[in-house]
Image (cartoon, rainbow over all chains, first blue to last red; front, side):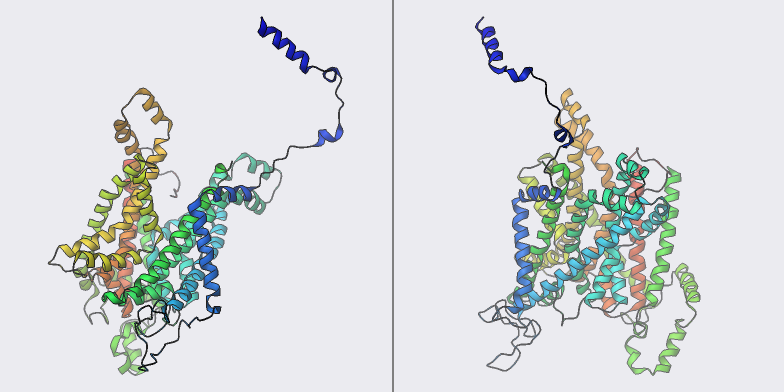
Length: 324
Length: 314
């Protein structure tokens, strides 16, 4: 009994005169549309920040990049290519172990390893970033055409089946054999092989997306193809593009090490991580000199692993399915 | 089924033909000193010209191409110039191929034996320490250029275990480290893919049904999940072969194993064009054969693949 009476009392409490009046139609209110303050990049950034490891590695990479850029202008820095002489004997200061003057020691002809490592990191990062950008541009263009245009699909697929069959290492070797070793030729050689993967990923995604209803609607409304590709398709692929680009950097750095090892890399006068590791390798038989192999190896591993992890977690974060 | 294999085989043959031709033209762009060898300095320009003409390098390029194919069909790959002067390239390679083949096959076998179970365990204990450890290993191996860890293994592990640093045919203990190094990459990729497919498969509805029916977890794992996860894995066999080829270039020269990978590095450094040409052709053919076998294996294990319908892109 008590239950019923309470409910009734509630209703009388809530009811008021207002409820029994006619509502007034408001033109302005009727025109208002729903608005959500969802922003793609902000959500991406937010979910990226949740991954603590990736964030700390990102900070580390940014710090390394900044340091590498300003290092030559810091006080007390030595030149990476100058050969230093031992003041007492007047000979080259060869294989000096790390000390106060040469923080990472010197190499076998008396160059300062500390500045060589940072100069090498600069070269290698430069190669990596340029390769990643060029690969992305070529790969996205060809991948988009390949996936979107039905006329180009068959010839490009045939071409892909041939290209994919050639081991990339072999192409890399051939191109560097033919072009003379320099930073440009290394970048060219890597880009020749590198865009294929990107193009294939883009193509596969576009094939999936191109016939969805919203694109059909867009086409019937007369949207030009380039606009459909740029506005309707590519934004879906940001996650995959970022992933491929960030993986291209460690790949390019590794390819440079490989080319240097087989004798097709940069000249010794141009320090790069590949050069440094190769110099360290020559000396690894004597345990005292292994620091020359170890230091560049550590820097190289830190950079490549960071790019790999950052790329993967950014790709996760950029996927709208993972947004709240 | 047979039709598919024949079609795929034809495609591989066409690809091989295209690649050989492209490689041939590219190699004609190489510096010509690579054909002269050590004698180059002693020759006058006229003598060099005569020498190159005798080698057939002054013929029209299409005639050269024709001769090249004829020689190839006869199994004649030219003579080495600087590596071992005037020894037929085919003999040099024949000596080396045994080592590379043995190491390659052993490495592929080892990586399947270790990598696949690793992936299975990682999927089974997803999110636990084994999975984390395995993921750390995979990230390291995939991200860091292989040269770095090959070198560190050679330097520090030989030191630590007191092993000889270089390969010695008579001491089997020196075979172990090159083999393990060569397998590290493929192990990581097998484990990574196996884990991914297992996890994908475990999330499917039929597994839920099987659990709801009360099928034992073991039976689910081995009967359902693993069988389905194996299928896409067949596709990675060729990738493993390619990885092993690339790896062998490092490993063989690092441990001075008298194989083809080491030979390639040597020949490039000594500018021995005929040897480089032969090895490039050999490696690309291996790559093509690997991909062909991978596709056939894929078709054999997966009854769902439709044959002969359009072009497929992996």
